[in-house]
Every structure is written in structure tokens, then in C-alpha cells.
Image 1 (cartoon, rainbow, N blue to C red):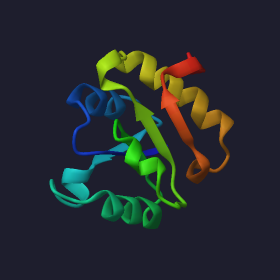
Image 2: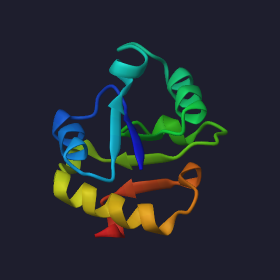
Image 3: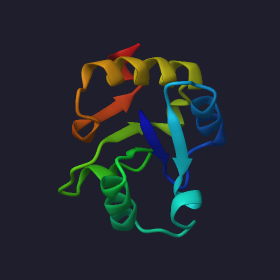
Image 4: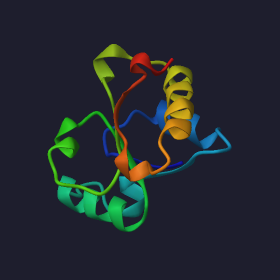
Length: 108
């Protein structure tokens, strides 16, 4: 799974993803810029087959052909639980562009 972490994603998730062999991860800061707008991020993710990992549910509002995985920062999900949820999601969805899920949710 290719995950593009939005600007405000806590580094503990990015680092956990980097340590997971089956996840390729990058950040909006690295791929675009710190101040990239949601529509720019979405177009970039779609063009480059990234699934957006974010706490910003605005990404669900766009007509899109890209995956979006949301987490609630206030709930402080552990990186291990998020990775476990992503592993199940990765096996359930054949097309990552169709993913619209909250993690960890009922995935763990």
C-alpha cells in the first residue's frame, strides 16, 4: 500500500509506516509542499496512486478516484493498531482507490 501522509499527521504514524515492509510512505511536505491545498493533494494522490492518510475529513467531500484513510487524532490510536487496521484494509480492497475508511475502527 502506498500511503501519503497529510500535513498534520503525527510523525509517530509516518515512522511506524516506514518500518512496515508492505507500506510505502511519503508525506505531503516531501511530495508537494507544507501549504499544499486539499484539492492539490487529492489530484497528486490520484495521479500517483497514493492513499491519503489524514485526520481531515474534507478529503471525503471531493469527487475522487483515490483512497482516503482517516484517523481521529483526539482518540490517540496507537500506531500498532493503525498498522493492523491497514493490513486488513489492504487485503479487503482490491482497488485502493475505493478505500474510504476510519482507522483503527472495527478493523482491529
